[in-house]
Length: 472
Image (tube, rainbow, N blue to C red; front, side, top):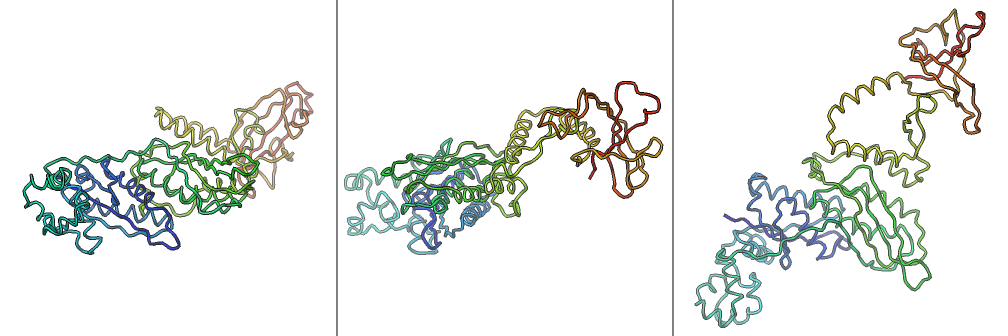
C-alpha cells in the first residue's frame, strides 16, 4: 500500500522570517530528500512518497520522528523557530487534502477521505460556488454524481483528480532534483555600505546552502560569496571572497564565523544591493554518522583545532598563524620549515582524502615505520647547539647523564646554521654522531659529538659534545 506525507512549515521567529515562502518550501523539500527521492512541490505543500523508505527507517512513525527532528534541528541551528504541519494518506491528494483541512480545523489530520471538504481539492476550487449550490460539500458528495455529467459540467480535470485521489490513476508529479552545484542570489532589503552589515543577507544564503547539502548528503569544502555593487559608481561591478575549509562539513556554523571574520575587514567601495553564493568544492559524505550530523548525539561540542586555526587565520591573516612542515632534508636544522597554518592543514586534509580514496595497502606499516624513525628526533631544537663539558669521554649537563640510544651518524659537506640567510657556512665539513641521553634534572636530551673528517693529532682527538634538543 502506498504512503504519502504532506508537509507545510511556518516560521514563527521575530523579527522577520529567515526565508521567504518559496525558499522555505524548497528548503523543506531539500531536507526531505534525505528520506526519499520522491519529493514534489505542489501548491503550498511538500509531498513525499515514502512507500519505499518505510522499511529502511523502521516504519512510518520512526521516519516521521527522524524527519521532524531534522527539520527542528535545522531551524534551531539557523536561530529560527518553525511550526511543522503534516498529514498522511494513501495518495498524494488525500495527504494534501487532510493537510489543508487540518490547517483550517486543527486536529482534523485523520479525517475520512469521504468527509474531506471540496475546497481541499485543488481541481475543485474554480467550481466551489456551483458545487455548493448543488449540494456537493464533500468528496463523497461529488463521487455520487454521474461521471458523464460531471465531465460535461466541470471538465475532465476534476474527474482525473478524483481518480488520482482514489488511486485509480497514478500520480504524475515533477520530482525535485537538486542541482550539482549550489548557486543562489538574493536582493537585499536596503543598500549596504559596510562589510559587516552584509552578514544578514549571507546568513539567508547559508541557510539555503545548508538545506542543499543535507539533501545532497555532501559537505562543503569551498564556497564563493559575491556582492553586487551600485552600477552608478565608477567602481568594479562586483566584489567577492572565497572561503575554504580543510574538512568538509554540513553544519555551517564554522563557515558562518569565517565569513563574518572576513566581512568585518572588508571595505566596500560602493553600496551593495544584492548577494550571491556559489559552492566551489563539495565532497560526498558516505559515513552514515556524518550524514546525520545534525542529530544531538553526533554534534561536536566546541570548535576543533582545525576550526580554531581557520578562524584565527581569517581574523589575523594567514601569515600570522604558522605551523611547521617537515622537509626532505637529513640536516636537523633543515628538517622542517614554517608555513601558513591554514595552507598546511588544507594540504594535509587533501592528502588524507586521496589516501582514503586510493585505499593503499600496507599504509599502516609505513606509518609505524615512520613513527619509529621520528622517535629518534627531539621535540624542540635549540637555536644554536650548546657546547657541553665532558668528564672523560662522556658529556655532562646539570650532572651526569645516562646514554639510552645512539650513535646515529649524520654526515654533510657543510652545515648551514644561523648564517644560512647570509650565505655563511659554519664549517667546511662535519660528521656528527647523535645520542639520546637521560638527565635526572632535564629529562631526555639530544646530544651530538662532532669530529672533523681530516685526521687530527692524537692530543686533539677528544670529542666535542653539544646539546642540540629536548624531548617532550
